[in-house]
Amino acid sequence: MAPSRNRRPGFSRRAQYSLFLGYVIAVAGSLVGAVLLALATLDPPAFAALRASMGEVTTPVSSGIAGVGRGIGAIPSSIGSYVAVRDKNVALQKQIDDVHALLMRARSLSYENRRLKALLQMREHIANPVVAARLVSSSASSTRRYAVLNAGSWQGVKTGQPVRGPEGLIGRILEVGPNSARVLLLSDPESIVPVRRTRDGLPALAAGRGDGLLDIRSATSANIGFEPNDVFVTSGAGGIYSPNVPVARVIKRSRDIALARTFAQPDTLDFALVQQAFMPEAPPVPAPVK
Image (cartoon, rainbow, N blue to C red; front, top):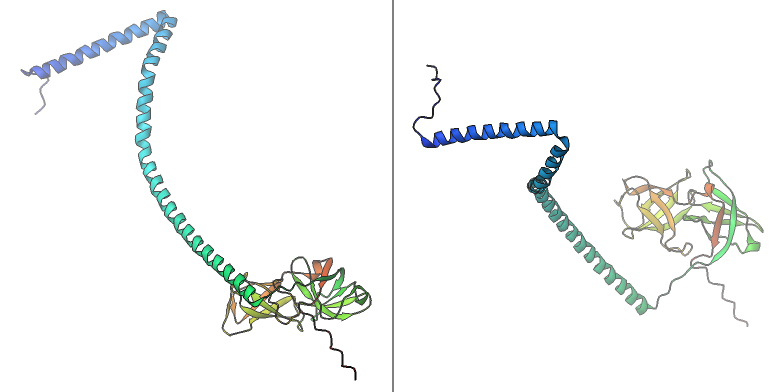
């Protein structure tokens, strides 16, 4: 059945007042709109002044409402930022604690080293430089790896002295002439250098392969793992090379024997430094006179 077209509110006074109030508001709105339209058409300057006045009145209210809206909209992001900052603070605090523990351990080891050195009255041996000379040539394609130095016995160069460049160890003097010397490079198959790994002090031997690379193998035990970028420096064992001179860096992961590349590349160097042996041989004791 279709609804009746009679929309009278009946006997409810609240409904009657609501309907009457709606009519009044509609009529008042229409009259205000008509007045504003007439004012804007007949007197634009007055309408502009009225509009500016209304803007002055409504701007604070609009600003306040907009601020409340922004505050409510920022609540989720503020909560997320608080949670993220809290997690970061926890991670940073853990990192600080770990670094503090390592620092305390390093200080303890440093103190122990100083105490042991003082107890044993140890002193560091520093290899004194002999001469800085030019590398005239080096073999790059032969299986034997040599270089020629334009300094010899007249400049104080002797057989067995180590030769190094700015990046690290190059080799040792093999033969000496008056004004030239032959250098046995690290990559030569006859070259064997005692080294140690910087991250844990693992003693090892660096042997030349004849192809520009080195084989690194442990000097103490088998089944040792080598990681890429493991750095090896001279250990000072053997008495020829002073300790802590860069030798080679491991190329790829392996066990027992690692493939490494030397830091110093003789074919790219112009000059090299000849040094005294780390622990030179003692001079012969003269025989007693009878």
